[in-house]
Amino acid sequence: MKKTKVEIYGRKYTVNSEYDERYIDHLCGYVNGKIRELVLKNQRLDYADACALCLMNVADDYVSEQKAKSHALTENEQLSKSYKELHERLKKAELAVNELSKKNNKLEDEVRRKDNEIVKLKLSLEKTYGGNSSESSEKDSTETK
Image 1 (spheres, rainbow, N blue to C red):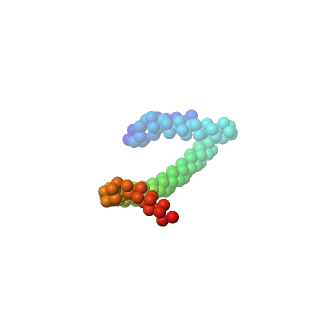
Image 2 (cartoon, rainbow, N blue to C red):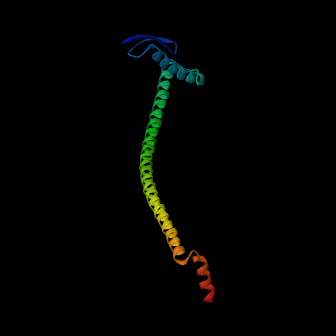
């Protein structure tokens, strides 16, 4: 334990603590600031009353911070849960996109095969009908009218 000499509201104390002297000085500065605020509002406060009211204010600060911390933790949990849910949805969507991409590739391959078949059939028709398959079909359609 370290001994640190401090002054609170004009009175000197020796604090036994495991904490660093700078931290203890910081705490004393906070307490002195709170007491100064009270004394500025009511200069008739004696030492005991100023300390009691300061204690109430510090307790209020502490409880307020605890509530804020609790709220932040709750919000963090909710955000974490939302993140996990969205991450799962993203994974599923990525899988669906991959599946659709595979299907699309298969369909594009099928279209290419069909296009090749059509070209081959046209070539076959041209060979069979002497290269005028489009003219022949035009003649056939005009003769039937």
